[in-house]
Image (cartoon, rainbow, N blue to C red; front, side):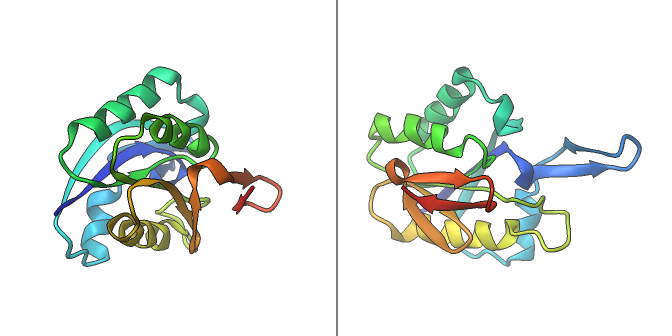
Length: 161
């Protein structure tokens, strides 16, 4: 059974633009991460959007839900921005798709030294293949049920509520 990977943007996917001195979106880092990690599990991949999660609207969340609904895979990994990851997880959780959906992201972009993106990707990919059906957030070695998680902005980490 294949893992389906969905890119939606977030800090995880940002690139540094040397000309403007800002973080911007380009192509997804997921194909490079899969190669770098020597990821051996069968998978499919799609980009639904490339947005900072603070810019994500209800229509974008519905597109993510549609992508999750339309694939036959029962294990789905979504790379998402951390600021509104909980909101997207709620849309997916309330839909009760009968699949295992794991959202992950990064506090530091993949391209930057000391990024948590590669670890979070591998951790979440494993979790998506092992957890029972449901919607989860997997960040920095911890797994949370979508109903009992929040981002602690002062600490820069996710925690149970």
